[in-house]
Image (cartoon, rainbow, N blue to C red; front, side, top):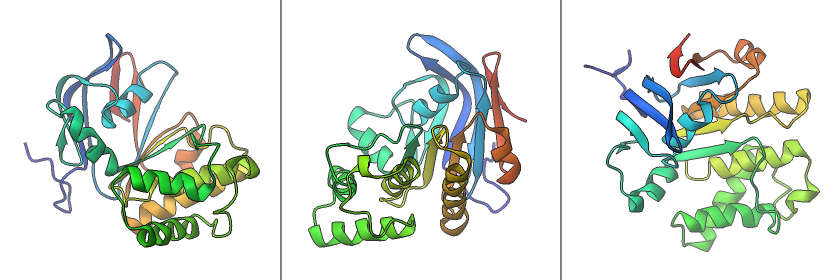
Length: 230
């Protein structure tokens, strides 16, 4: 079966008849999903229907329960533990609760990720840190501690962290869930710009249907142990 898109591109994420598990339980059966470069894809559904389990499968935190799946060229059915860090370098993840290291400055948070993903040249690290903070509109915040930033600024740092290694896909799990409306709009606008300008695929879990109206994309819904495009 040919699973290229209209432009002849191969998917960056592909699930075929995949079972998604959470612990011992299968939460989604027979998932079929292709996500291509430049896609904006939403996963919606009620709490406990498997949205985050799909995300955790994409990042190889949860093993694949059955069927087949590839993410950024890695086969999730056969991936070895030592390969998982290389897979994750190709993914940028943005969480609802930011997950910054609170005892380190913004700059140190970003440096930590770069060094953990194999960067060794301090000059290159400084340059990349500067570039991503500029890209998210925080060029003067490098030396601030996370607690000195607003929620919106912390989420911008989280996005800066997610784009450090020019990922093929950004995974955003309820990225505006803890933000007020105006701040959330700024974050969505930033993610949309990255999607359009860089061609980075974005997979976003959200409960907020109004986001989809303002930033249209393909929508998958989890319910009754299935996940399908609506």
